[in-house]
View (cartoon, rainbow, N blue to C red):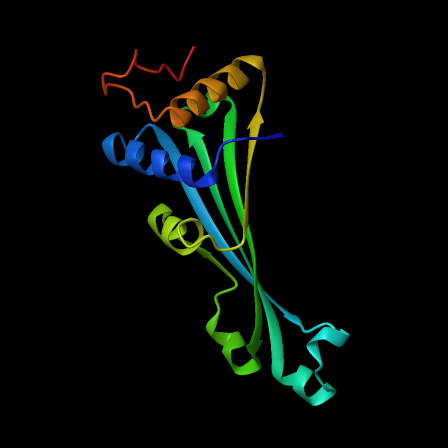
Length: 159
């Protein structure tokens, strides 16, 4: 597994366009998890014990996984957004789903476009051939080239 040096927004926008044009090219899954924690006791919060009991800190993580339609292509791109949403009133805790599947459009609107949290991209490859396929895909994303758009030869995902 290694870190990818392409902007998460660029990847998500490209994948959304590609998925709309050719829905069977990639397998896409998106999960959002929320974790409620007690507010830590720190001087900068200036909260008494009673105030800290009424508040919770919320952390939301969203993960977009992109795989080729053919699992034997041997690669996975993962975009992870970690967002510490900050203190919330305790009664709102029950309104947050702890783990849910969302669609790629919601992921883009809620996390990427709003610049929410810290986003990172990692690639996981099974072998050197899979790494070559991921690098070609990332090159296409970087220059916004889609198969069949006239900007170059069609991308082959299998070999």
